[in-house]
Length: 286
Ligand SMILES: NC(=O)C1=CN([C@@H]2O[C@H](COP(=O)(O)OP(=O)(O)OC[C@H]3O[C@@H](n4cnc5c(N)ncnc54)[C@H](OP(=O)(O)O)[C@@H]3O)[C@@H](O)[C@H]2O)C=CC1
Ligand SMILES: Nc1nc(=O)c2c([nH]1)NC[C@@H]1CN(c3ccc(C(=O)N[C@@H](CCC(=O)O)C(=O)O)cc3)C=[N+]21
Ligand SMILES: [Mg+2]
Image 1 (cartoon, rainbow, N blue to C red):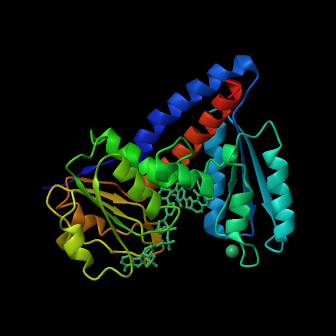
Image 2 (cartoon, rainbow, N blue to C red; image 1 turned 90 degrees about the horizontal axis):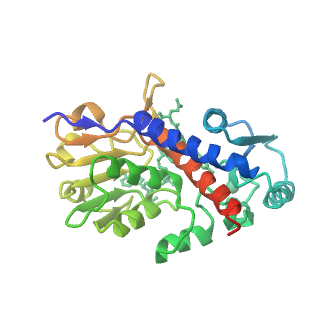
């Protein structure tokens, strides 16, 4: 079997067209969805992602602000910028690009963002809402993965076993909760898992979110399984690659997401969706 690709670029294009239409529908009310992105320091990967986010905003007719600061910026200065954006009515979403320099406490900065503008879904209020099944912003990467599953007719995962590799607060854990919400039976694996392959071989859906190449190889995948690759790594030639041994696994899996062109673009798309929802909430006076 050769797996069918789940094309994150094509799906993003569809979803972004819908977002652009929703943004246009708010224009008569004098509201333009606005996203503020804060980048501290000069991490080259962050520069690329942040530029992609700003470009994506322009494409769907959003207002976007990119604030760049020196790596030496103090935590207090950053917190003051977040507070100013919390109070800025032209801004509906705030994203502080991670990682932050070591002298700044990521957690403190994330918690300073108003939950009403937390379009990353990283605030403890957003995470808590997901945990108990209440309305709140969903973390963009796992949210994008759920949209990819939905696009192949797997919105309801009743009877399916999903295995998530990774348990970070921004990817693995919210991913597991969203899969659970969709009725999957969920296993979460991490660096303390004794026999990863024994877990993944049982999976109908595998989500790899580790940050290491070739964490998932063909011998670890059940025939016909859906494989979602969140990883962003560089191979020896400096080329972008995921956590999955793509060439091997595609011969076994039923569906597979590529890197690049898979989860990455979907993450940015869901950021636009969350910002859109935030602006719509304001427009509706909610
Ligand atoms: N496409 C996108 O839009 C995005 C991609 N990413 C990428 O996704 C990847 C994961 O990101 P993130 O969650 O932030 O990373 P973290 O480093 O925070 O988490 C990695 C997780 O993988 C687990 N792990 C490490 N080694 C192994 C192993 N050998 N077997 C099983 N589990 C292991 C860790 O376990 P433990 O908890 O025990 O340490 C941890 O839970 C990275 O490549 C990142 O760049 C991230 C965000 C967005
Ligand atoms: N507050 C915060 N929110 C984030 O959402 C966040 C973050 N910090 N820090 C870093 C990670 C990483 N991340 C990516 C987003 C898009 C691509 C993406 O578009 N990737 C393209 C390729 C990009 C390239 O060519 O390098 C693709 O996979 O096709 C990748 C990675 C968001 N993150
Ligand atoms: Mg830090």
